[in-house]
Image: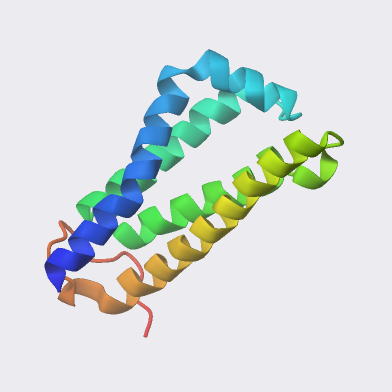
Length: 139
C-alpha cells in the first residue's frame, strides 16, 4: 500500500513541479498572459505562484509535511481558477471554452488537493515512505 501511495503522490505532484519550474524559467512569457488576464503585478504574481506550486509539489512528492504542501497547492488552485481562468468574463466563444476547461481542471485538482490534505493529516506517521509526518493532525 505504501508504494501505491508514493506513486500517487509523485504522479499528482509532477504537474505542479513542472508548472512551478515553468513559472520561474518562463517568467516573461507567463507574466504577459497574467497581465492579459488583468492580474496586478503580473511578474510578482507569476514568480510567487511558481515558488508556491514548486514547493507544494515537492512537499507532496517527497512526503515533507505533505499535508501543508497539499494546502499550498489548494491555495494556488483557488486563485488560479478564479483570477486566471474566469471564463465567464470572456466574450470570444473559443477563448471562453478554453478558459472553462482550465477552470474546471483547477477546480478538480483543488478537490484532489483537499482530499490529499485530509488523507495526509489523518494517516499521520502511519503513512510510510515519507520524510516527515504531517504538520496537522485531524481525526
